[in-house]
Length: 574
Image (spheres, rainbow, N blue to C red):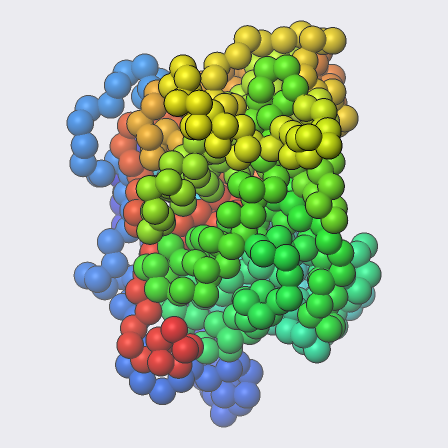
């Protein structure tokens, strides 16, 4: 694949848009210039110049030009197979679903479940660039350039999903390619979403109308989920840095201040908070669906801003320490290490596929945090053991793909051993015994098991093309160099090809313990934004997105690490 698009070809493609943009610009200057100051928050005074992407300061990420040794033919072929899978899904979407949101891969229809703003294209745009699919990328740019992000009067955009998918997707594609229209569209959308924060606490409301600014709650009523409140900071802070708009930073930092000052047990941040008072509404501590990405964004804010925001680091350390102490358990038979949730300190022993992001996060933390050696080792052990369990839940199934939710068979508790099964207690006893076998509890390889022989029961049997397991495989491979994570990722991809591929795309599964598995008529946009992207990066020898220079948002959109300038640190109190 060519490492660039010829200028003549690009110019031809973008000519209609360029002419329209020119007429629009001069009309704006003539009619609206006197009123523009009232439309947006003003950048603070000071040297807030950002180099224009087309200047010599900006170097787009061109995967084909990244230096390195010749690729291993085996892994190059596997990366090509993932690229082909992306192209198959992209073609099916364009043939049967565009300009709607998502493809229905069994009936070759479509569904609009994310505002009708072509979410599959927006979410997959940076994957196109990373895979070197520049034809598809530049065919998509004019589509985004003409988006208005308008909604009918009584329709609402879900704030959290729109931020991580649409806003994150455009910002990442801009950061990789330098196409300025993508930054302009991201800036427009970010401003239209700001009314979601018009609450007494400063937490975002569930949904907002991008035209009227009206906001409304979601299914949780007066509660905001911890994941929703703490998963917008990466996107808005990066945009604040690019544009100089202080309002972006100040608005999303309010949630961080609430967390810093919250009266909670150690680092056990509850999953529900009152959207108006800013107070906790339960004692549910989890890394699952209600909380997952919030844990990510604590560490990743610190990394994104060149390790400068101590508040984010402190919050991550509090939360991760409590996860290791309170949420990690060993199963009763194969001693599988798993993470669960607790309510008032009582574990449910539910293990979610969504929680399989955690081993990657812990591995990233062990690789980057200024930890004492003992804590670094614990984080690294936990990462490997949890990732192994995620893999086992795949390998156990007839389809080779993991169920969405299982209930683990826990070790029995007793008066003599009230913390039975908690991983940290087993590690401490193993260390006191002189580390027999040299393999910590929960990290030992175990045999696969069929139905009726497993140390868990499946509660939700579906596989929804989710990325969390292969995301962790990718980060573990990059941080440890252990090739077993690549081989396991290839086994997952082979199962995806075998079980989920349809004439027009890929379909979720209803029951993973059958093969062929019955399919569900959906292809979520995160399959192209996350699952295929992480698999491609896992099989690519070149480090296209180095972890010391980029940070992935929770939708796998990479954003470049940056340093706050002196005036920004002063303005934002960093």
